[in-house]
Image 1 (tube, rainbow, N blue to C red):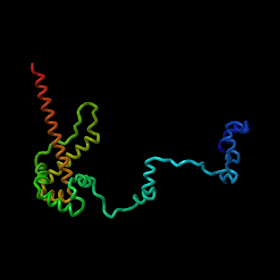
Image 2: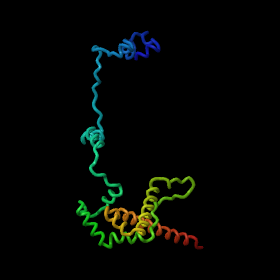
Image 3: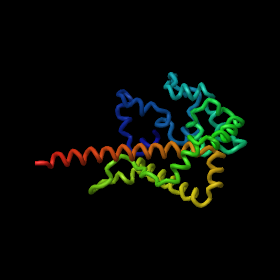
Image 4: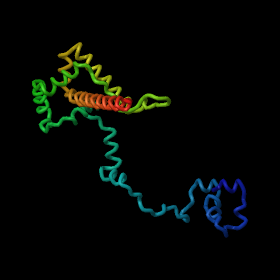
Length: 221
């Protein structure tokens, strides 16, 4: 406010009788820069205007869960053990059996899966056969079609690359690869994606067969 007097003094012409009293009645405008830096004095009410705190579902949830103190504890605390990788956590969530709640049950499940040909051995057999093409059902050809650089296409390409790398490891070191897949149970994660790739390839093959038959029928005289 004290800078306004240095620009011009036109506010003083009306002596604050207009709405410009917000300017000319301000202590910074009246007392100047030096006096304003030392404080306005007790005659001026400097208390904040009463207002109702903002409310929203996010703020209420933040306050009810501990507020800033809990957030700082969560940020600064160092866990005793490192968290599982995203792949391991996804494999853990994909477990359908209710008996996989603790480490002992998981160890028993490893032994069971190792001797069950319909689960783990079936996955190994599929992995040793030629892999289906795992790709998104999207049209990637065409001028100015940049969908191949989008996350969905990159996800399927990365998963196909991981399955191919796993197949190569199984050919070079079969026993070590089987042990690693059973140890962290990551084979369930890859088995679900491999099964999805097989279904996608079969669906695409049926679509091509139907389209070929339809085209051949329409081409007849």
